[in-house]
Image 1 (cartoon, rainbow, N blue to C red):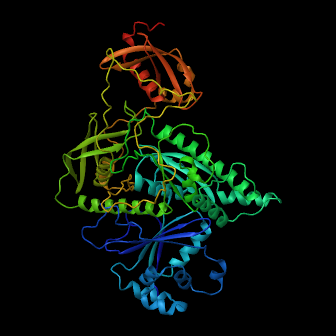
Image 2 (image 1 turned 90 degrees about the horizontal axis):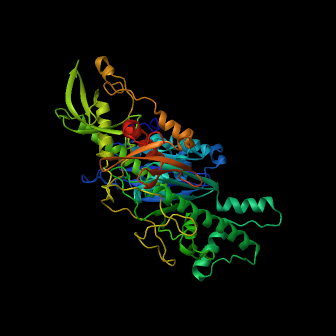
Image 3 (image 1 turned 60 degrees about the horizontal axis):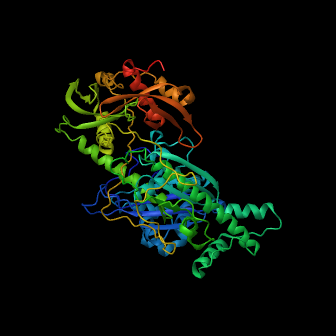
Length: 606
């Protein structure tokens, strides 16, 4: 009798691979195919979750969807599963002897083989966009000793990191995979049945993205809805793209055959849209006004590397190159954007790998934390509060100043840098220590180099087309003839760290009372100024404002609000004749500063 399998949504840290597991299986269940990967975990004592390669995928393959007929004709789930596996993972699950009896693989073989492993149950992690195939996969994996874990969006990015309700878990997983290789900001184009693009900014927060029909969907819709247009297969498309690469002759803009006319139009649309998306991404994610850095433990994508994945990812990768990779005729050069494009068809599996590393590392850190006899007094911590400080950062730092024993429960006194304090439980303290590891100390704004005692920051200058000018620094664009290759992570690459969700837990007696949020930190009142800036931005025209420059307060007046192009701004003229443009954050700070120092404004009646 096979061991009872378990299936669940991700519940950390229990869902993380147990120590001693040698192999895990990850699955991406899409609308056209099922994509699989094995991750072989080294048993070396030097290999742990501080190394991002502990769970790095080692073998990839793709299979068709599971057929309804196979599920109904009496074929055992173990047999169906065995047919979908390559030899190495097949033998790991069913044993080498099962290869000689491939027509009669049984659940008992999987059970017998599991007894030979240090960890009996195989950990299986699934990201899906096809619910029907997910149900079938779950039935197949139930035939072997396994932990079947379905990942959701919150495992990759939570709402505080910009994930919106309904955002596809596959998109979030590919973003995490891109961050694994290149860091934040990240931009991913996923070319499949649907084409998506998703992005993060340099702080690691999700900007959002777009969704539309894929290349094949567009071509098939034309053939289906128009009798005169032929059907063009995915193979034909790929062969025609290869032909342009080998011959050096792009598809002509003025095509002389119906099929080429259909393809060149679709390619031009994707190339144009893609370049526009990249331009907007650079504008938003690399804004000169954004001085914030990625979370600690993640890299900064200074080379502006864009990643293409999915079945048509290689075609996208060519179309987004300078001169469109020679696939279509080059369009007139617009902004001289500085970016690179890289292909990677397996981003989802690398994204899952990054998450597993993070969760296992958290579990090991928690074990160290729980070790008896270790004092935490003096350690730095961080905690998110639903209020922003003057610099817009809602993460407050502090230190552990005292350990308090209350009826056999240990509480920890946290004294924040702003003078507030509170008592927290061990579980909360662990989360605060982890958050501090990710974000560190508050970033200090760079020292301004004042002119005549102060410095004003204006909007970026624009070129003749009205677009923001790009800086000259950075890597030059790739040569049109260069071919990007899929990245290989370095052996000692640091594991990316993502925010760890804290589980809510009730504590008995005094501990429960002391763990409420927060005991000494006063509840924050509603920010009326911020609400007004968002709801009625024009109402601030002619309002007086104040701003500190090197310790001296300067007063001025808002003369206009401009939202003709993003981001919107408020123009300020200072009393000494200087001018600058405010972002919404600048405006809120200057209004609050005026509220504090307005009594010194000699022109307050203006």
